[in-house]
Amino acid sequence: MDVLSVTGKKWIYKNSDTDKIKKIKETFNLDEISAKLISQRNIKLNELNNFINPQLKNTLPNPNILKDMEKSVVKTVNLIKKNKRLGIFGDYDVDGASSAALLASYFNCINRPYEIYIPNRKLEGYGPSIEGFKKLIKKKVDLIFTVDCGTLSYEPISFAKKEGIDVIVLDHHQCEVKLPDAYSIINPNRLDDESDLKYLCASGVTFLFLIALNKYLREINFFDNIKEPDLLQLLDLVSLGTICDVVPLVGLNRSFVKQGLKILNKKNNLGIKNLINISKIENTTTTYHIGYQLGPRINAGGRVGKSSHGVNLLLNPSPKETFQLALELDQFNKERQLMEKELLTKVLTESKKSLNDPILVLSGVNWHEGIIGIVASRLKDKYNKPTILISIKDGMGKASARSIFGFDIGSLILSALNEKIIVKGGGHKMAGGFTIDESKIEIFKNFSKKKFSKIKLDSYKNKKLVLDSEILGTALNIDFYNKIQLLSPFGPGNPEPKFVINSVKTLNSKIIGESHIKSNLITEDGIMIKCIAFNSINTEISAYLTGNHKKSFNIAGKLSLNEWGGEKKVEFIIDDISVNKSSKNTVPSSIG
Image (cartoon, rainbow, N blue to C red; front, side, top):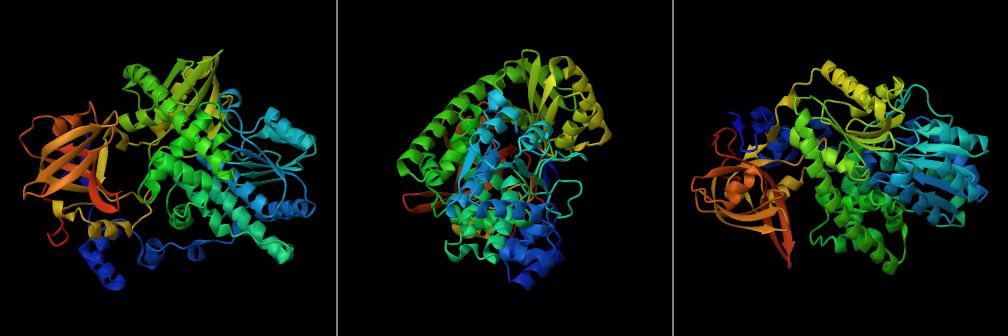
């Protein structure tokens, strides 16, 4: 049966097919729990090898299936042969920084000159601008690449063309039928692109471009007198952008991340190495560490007006300078957290007036533009509704949008642009941004509600926590943890398995940081388990972990490996608590 938790979430267990589990066990020589978890992910048997062991050689397509790839490569090669200076215009987020660093790293390897320009988020906003292009052109570039942006940059690209500079767009954001007058636009989300790679982020698109470029240079014997770059060594940057842009970890993305994490953990990139050390990551770096510790620090530069810090960190060869950059980004992230906390308090108060709306559209004067995206994400998670926050200054609003599964926020923004409700904007299914005249905010709000009502999405009304299985307290061991890792990397499209441990009581707890609770719990059969509940202070969960509840309760969450002083221990990360015991989907005791 389904359970309603203390946070109001409905606990829903995934269905299991006994026959399918048996077939997976026999065909692939797997144990019961691994077979069960895989069966719940609806992976076809003929795709299971690539899922368990994703490798580029099995998943990498011919890059030329992407529209405009061949002409882009030919153009670039002609300029490389002439030793022309290349311009890189990147977005200020992690995917933009990773994409820019990928191109620059490659040009470094082949000893070709380039210039990078990352716009100031607050002063220039998202994407290319005429002023930004002017600055690159003044540095005598002969070609401009836009990475993680440019798909809707009509005026800046037209300006560059008038100045005699071609633009190649490497992007993944949603497109309109009419495209800018660029030399070429490589974007799997083009309406005329047939690559079936719409799930890639800009880092993935950029890497495919480099594969095609490298192949062409090899074919014309460019590497006879220069060492050919090892593209596999750049996969750490690809995995960084892919994880932080929260794109589905399926297909090629899964291979990028699985193989990229191996490169990243070698710590060959000095910037990443210093950021890992400053973030105090003692364990093997995983998707979790990148998404919640490294990514926010790289992003923090763009949020506080130091947009180039991220790409500089990823490119700088100096141990001293990368350490200083990592220190500054860490400090910027702390500043961002304080600003976020302050703005979240304001916005939560504002949101109470609109809780009956199916989509939250909130606005305020001089809300920090670098923070509104994070706060929108917090509200989206809290209310399970698409959320758009608009910061107003001098009659104009800058907006950040975050969505829930089932509602395409990028399409909403494009529709509003076509209806001339907003000035400019863009995005993808889960996130976006735009500029709007203050006088049209109410019109946009009503427009959004109508668009949302047409999709008949009822799931947003009920917060759900989808669970894989119940386990025993004895399952918190290295062997069981390693079996789960067979399904990694985890992220959108392949969520980390979530489990329930029933009937536990709190032995003791302590607060760590400002908002986390670390606890020792004990099961019915006397097994002590170590747990942590992140950001749980002053929530419904904290009452059970820090209070004097004598009754037992059930915990839902995932396993985590804690490596400290050479010792490895498996802990349980608590996502939710319930007081109703369910007997459904219990794992046999042999698994515990």
